[in-house]
Image (cartoon, rainbow, N blue to C red; front, top):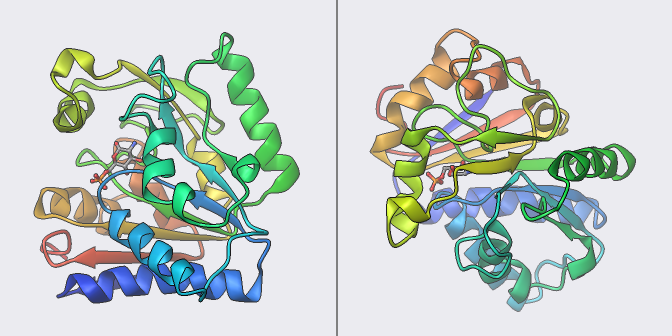
Length: 241
Ligand code: GLP
């Protein structure tokens, strides 16, 4: 694991963006695994800026997002599809048909999960997976539990996760109770994983994930078993390392 701690935001963002840009320069058809959340926002903004300057193209790339809320209309401002459109897809030259976010409104969610995994199987593996981490150690929406699912599945969100995400909604009751998420097995299939974490409220989760025992009670700790992980932390998130 390559752990990098940054004192300033600029360097954090630039390092994250450069990993993606150099991948696309060597492999324009790269398969990107993308994540939502506040931690990757700066990196996406930098990619948009570099694309505007014609220093990177996504025209042959494709993307798969980790997760999506269940039951939130796709054009709801807090759906993960809207997030990705707003922060990245609408501003770069990626073919919209090659951007994939699980459909949290599918009539048959189980079938949707199987379809998503089949696509990843057929068109993957993901070359570079961007990840964030929840304060309870979740990745995607894989919540701490006695066991973890390997494939894409529907998950009941823990109250602590709903509360953490309530800041993006008017009130807690508006936060969906379920989500579709890629499973741990699917996430670990990526050739390279780039974990982006910002903020002191993540410091404990980061320490448990990187230095604690590998346990399903801290899903991010399973990243220790992956051969190619880069971790970018700001000072707050890296405080206890
Ligand atoms: C949500 C997403 C996760 C993300 C997490 C952290 O729960 N489902 O995939 O990693 O938020 O978000 P942030 O970067 O805002 O801390």
